[in-house]
Amino acid sequence: MAKQTGDRLRVAMVGCGFFARNHLLAWHHLPDVDLVGVCDLDPGRAQGFADLIAELGGSRPAVHTDLAAMLAELRPDLVDVVTTMESHEALVGICAEAGVATICQKPFAPDLAAVRRIVTTAEAVGIPLMIHENFRFQGPMMAVRRCLDEGRIGTPLAARLSWRCGFDVFKGQPYLAKVERLVLLDLVIHLFDLARFLFGDVARILARTQRVRQGIAGEDGAVCLLEHENGTICEVLGSYHTRIDPDPFPQTLIRIDGTLGHLEVGHDYALQVRTAAGTECSSIAPVPPDWGDPVWAMVQESVLNTQAHFVQAVQSGQEAATSARDNEKTFALVEAAYRSDASAAWVDLATV
Image 1 (cartoon, rainbow, N blue to C red):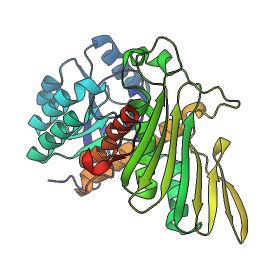
Image 2: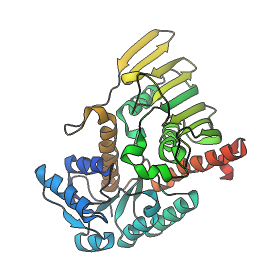
Image 3: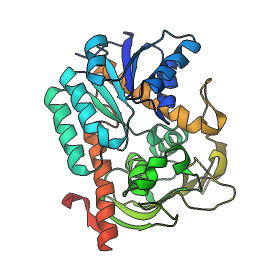
Image 4: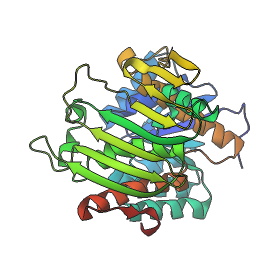
């Protein structure tokens, strides 16, 4: 049964690592949410998260090192799984057995077969399961979608989504240096979901990857061409090795050409819409939460928006925008991209 709007949701988190702090702060600041528990294999990290909530004036959440035990004791309405992808299948399985709504960090799983097993597990017991795919919930990206919905540049024909920077992703997440599937699965998956959000599902893909940084197991750059079912052609570029000044991190730079004009999102979230009627310039910069860091404003805003969306979905009983079933399509694009790179050929999504 769906929770009713206005009912307070009891939320528990599992995973207290590098990025999870953003989740923690967002849950604390969301209305109608009580963060009742935090869980991590490292009790010190879980204690640190609980202490932070208490320092911010909230009720100190219970600390656990075992997810099943936490669920049995606290019986939350919602669990946020903020762990590495290898653990997701087991942890979502525990949540499914407990019958609790779950939001799970991306990447969904290490491979498409595991994704499909998790989807089957969640659907078998009927729990809401959403993937924390937050790029489409960034304020600037939602503003771009509104421009398209309003028909300001007509029908999209061709587009470029670029997230290329020199950000040292390995400093905060050193385990990524050992990941054999890196930039497509860790970064470009965001852009694939964003392309689907803006232009719909994809018919086929052509992809090439690069490995520039020394001492890493996976690729750190990729260029992909997506042919959408509606005919839009979208170029997707992502890298962790690009030396660029000014470095756009953490922004996605965009150009979309339509039948009536084009739009661009440049550095510092500058939006230009050019049509026969002239050029309109505006800022679509994200609004940092009161608790946010201005450097990470877009990331923290999008985390807050993503979690608020799932709360609304749980309360209303409606399917979340990035439900497990929907995110399976985004993950299939990653799988198709790796197949395309290996074969140096187009891959039809229908074959994946």
